[in-house]
Image (cartoon, rainbow over all chains, first blue to last red; front, side, top):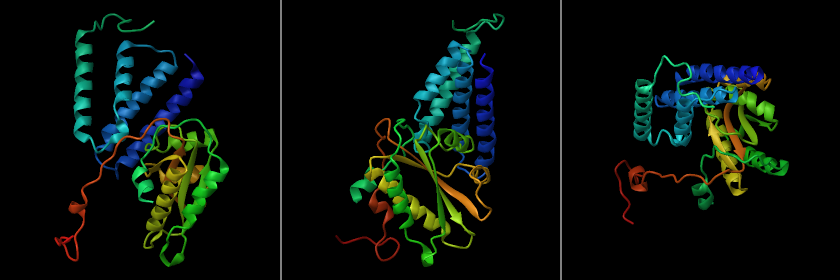
Length: 108
Length: 166
């Protein structure tokens, strides 16, 4: 793991989350899930930058990256459907996975 | 002018191409000629071009997406409450956005940032408060199609509910 990348990435992410938390007090409700989706993507990017590869995380990042988050809040209903699908995708994956195997889903 | 107004979009994906200083000055010129209540011109503008400085601002601006080549921070200079300062600054921002569009730049107005944190990062004195940030850069991909509510839904002639005969 590249500790410099991890450290700077973590600081950026912590700032993003803390500043978002404060900002959301005054911002439209839909910005909350939007910021959390962005944070999810940032977290996966950070893990990838630090050498962690996992098929589930790669797929989640791909799905979030393909969703037009910047089109919000015009497409709020589509966004909700997107999150529902993502959650079900995660639930299906977790349901199928063998949690006893430590390397489950890890990519080479 | 209407074509420029209609072609402006919020752009969040930028090329790395730097913006010539002359173009940045044209944006600032447009900003300072915006209308202002009592001609008070209650604004200050900060341009940020250094990649490291943009990154620092970005860390405290959840609404700032992509990697813009420059940021223009529009600040109130003096108390904004009880004055037309915010409206004046908003009009200056619109001048910047339209000039940017005319010059082939993409732009996006950001209000989702922590004002106190950005004030601190920019070393602004206490009477100067960042109110809006505009991210600037050459667009990396075409803007998405946008829409507006129909004019009939928005406009009332003479009094509420009044229609135009023409």
